[in-house]
Image (cartoon, one colour):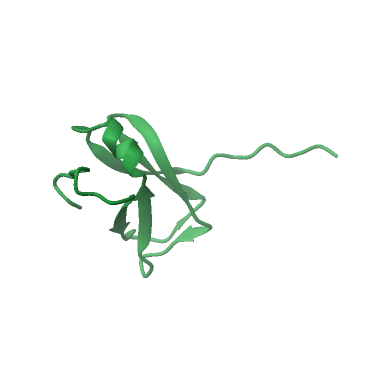
Length: 84
């Protein structure tokens, strides 16, 4: 991961690339800047052999010029079942 991001020279959204260490099921990867969730990556499974790409919009990065970006793996929210 980069040490810092400068949005002045950024043409569009910024993409981060990462890998997970273990197979992850029923999980999401959330991006936080200064404690505020700014993006979420969903997948049925995250696999170590597959690169995870994570886009964060330039407009969001500009809101937090000195913010710290943190990625966290969290449990996937449980959806309420629809009643028939």
